[in-house]
Length: 621
Image 1 (cartoon, rainbow, N blue to C red):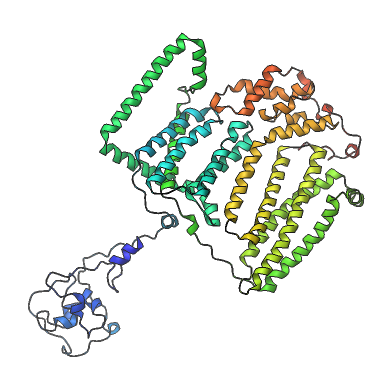
Image 2: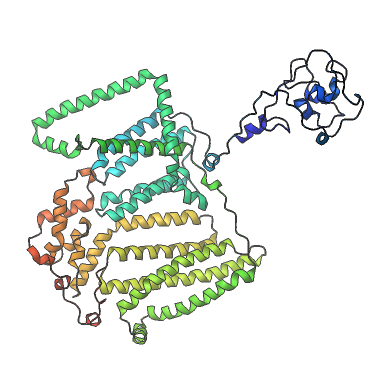
């Protein structure tokens, strides 16, 4: 757009005003200006016969311009010169004063608006949406309306298939080809959508769905550098409005060009639906088994939830159009440039980091003693229990890991890079800091292990331990980038985050929590049934191993929720199906108010160090 404006702008002195073409038969501006008239083209654009004092019908037409604002020769009597003769040198432009416009009624061309960031980064609008893309978009909307209203399960994978096909058809029409990293992000997104189909817990399902959307957006945009990876993971939102406009324009064009084909498709679809409904109803009335199977397979759509279904249909249409539009015209976020920071001098940059390395080294030396089994001496000197020692330090070490990553990022931004030895200095100082940070991560995880051994595993503890473990992976990737190069670092960090969320969902955190607490009870430690009974159906296989009445007390709430849900097959997870099978074979027994007694009565405490009088000796959270 900017090239078009510059190519049509007027001469200097009339910015933004298009130059008028020369009249037929009239001399060109270069010829009219003459070799002895500097800047003659400027004066030929807006010259005035009275101001120039030249006769347009005489021989001096070539010396002073001789053209009006339209470039045509002006007829009429000669205007006598007012002032010096025609042979006198022209006064400088700055001394001639303002000249009247050749056409005082002409309005200047409007200024072109400045292009926004997305306009500069996105390629031109794609060609009109194709028929295969429109059909895939429509299938996505129908799948959302029919399947997503009853819960989450395998229906997310079913909805993702036509949406992915819409993006594929749009990308193929735009001439884009599949790249290896695009396939990696797409496969990772589909893998994350398998978590809701396998696990009943809502919190790992939420993380998996959000991560799947981020990977899908990254697959559509692509990205090698940090701006591309960071912005590409949410850039799909920027295509919602352009995608809707693109889809509406494509529908209008296709409806106007091929009404016959559109009508044929509508008629055939209507006939197929009528046949399915009529014969399906007859077969269901003829056989009860077929009716039960048909009832399980078909969505339960009622008139009461119609507004909710319509909303899901619109969201599915908008999401699929946004994905298709992004696949056809992705925003090139990699073109966003981040200016490097001003390089510091070696002493100014290295001295604070070396001091930090020494502090880390002292702390790590003590942690190595503790990690190798020197708890007795440390606990004797501090007067703390093992659980108190673990709880006191884990959160601080988690913050240390986060702040260390921030320090590494800022240090790389301001690292010296002018002399050959600067690279060696950067690698040495930051490499030592990274290695020491890995020891800090190991110490934090060890403290969490002691904490869990004393008080049991909870959702908060397993979550923060997983985050700490992933931060350690990020530090390790940074160390590898310092040796092998940082070209793959942004994509490696994104892939490690997605792999961590996928692994977190596949291991079934609620099942792990229940299993660890059951194992602690078998070892003679207390168990918090009040906390375990609030877990999801994923915990049923582990809780089923408890003796009565603890088993029934921990399962009765889950059994009640499953009995009231009645979700169809496409909204039922594998964890929920396994829990139903277990509870059908061994239902929970009724124990009345006993299950709501005090938590310490559900197990016997150790007679060891945790049994001394301490308000924090038992920590269910």
